[in-house]
Amino acid sequence: MNKEQFITSLAEKGIALTPLQVQQYESYYETLVEWNEKMNLTAITEKEDVYLKHFFDSVTAGFYYDFNRPLKICDVGAGAGFPSIPIKIAFPTIKVTIVDSLNKRINFLQHLADGLKLENVQFIHDRAETFGHLPEHRESYDVVTARAVARMSVLSELCLPLVKKGGVFIAMKGAGGGEELQAGNKAISLLGGQVKESYSFTLPVEESERNIYIIEKVKSTPKKYPRKPGTPNRSPIE
Image (cartoon, rainbow, N blue to C red; front, side):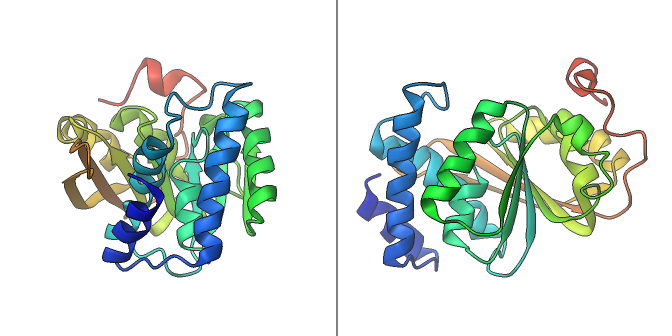
């Protein structure tokens, strides 16, 4: 997907990019490739692949959920900023907090945000398991996002404690998402979530399967969750 196809594809979904936004995506690509030479941010570096598999893929969340308002969003384990930074560029009114366990990635994101002149973004170096217990962040976000970070049962434990009641956790998954969702249903319910909507579609050009699950926070997460760092991965709620 080249830049022009990216712009057109978003416009077809009602997301009209300004020249500034187009330039921000372009600068994002250039910064990503430049920093990727000194640290491992992504295995995908061809321009058309980045536009399709990182930028377009991230913004697909905006096809199914309305980000065009001043929402407070947390992105767990965003790595090089996906999906929240592409979403932030497309929907500038949102406030974004990214939490990531690797300080080098946080440094990259800060440099990126400064270069793109993004406002209302913050980057926090922490494990999601400890971050979820901080009073200023626990159950305080309208939306929590994660893209392919871990299987659904693990992801729910890292993300749902951060979602406020009435807010949503948006999980972005590839092929096999349905099986993951089924296996994660117990965890979702235990942590206070309820699957509100699920969408399945194929990414243009390469036709690979994508799934987006919108999980509403219907009740508070029990205080003991998330468990200690590493525990959700080692022994998921099943």
